[in-house]
Image 1 (cartoon, helix red, strand yellow):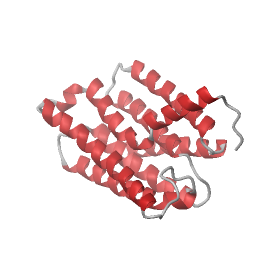
Image 2 (cartoon, rainbow, N blue to C red):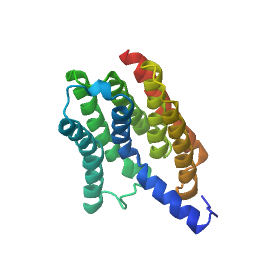
Image 3 (cartoon, one colour):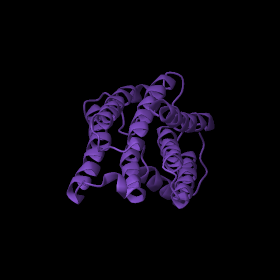
Image 4 (cartoon, rainbow, N blue to C red):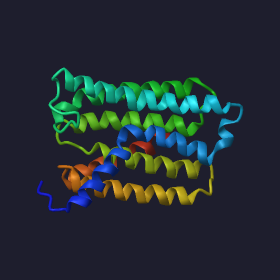
Length: 212
């Protein structure tokens, strides 16, 4: 796909793509819950709460990213950026495993807000559908991740009757910025971006009604 955007635009689009990489979405959602619903974590010490955030980052970001790095070093992929559909298959399976594990933990431990339960189940379904869609086209992982975050924030606000509309607005703006960034620096087609956006949002919605 030909790209005629300026170097500054491409530079900032790359930065946005890194900051809002889909692997960071679970950690961002946890930080959001802590910010808007601290009462859901009453009885948990600050150290334990920090440990929870770290464990989420460790399991949903670090380990999948490290697995991609190993695949690259072992010559199973040509790039850590997973530019082809074939290179994305194993990383999809790895992230699915960790997302399912996080969902299992959220069901097992009683100190987990229900928002985490439907969120983890949603991203597990999203990664599963992404793997299926990957057989036909290179669906945008960024679109799946940021759309899932937006829908999770919306559903959390509705379920808990929160007055956190500022967070919804911020997340919606970030979603638009991320999608625009991927249009600038990625080789995704509009169809792949739209499909990713649909998968991320609809799977969160489906998980919400399934869990509740």
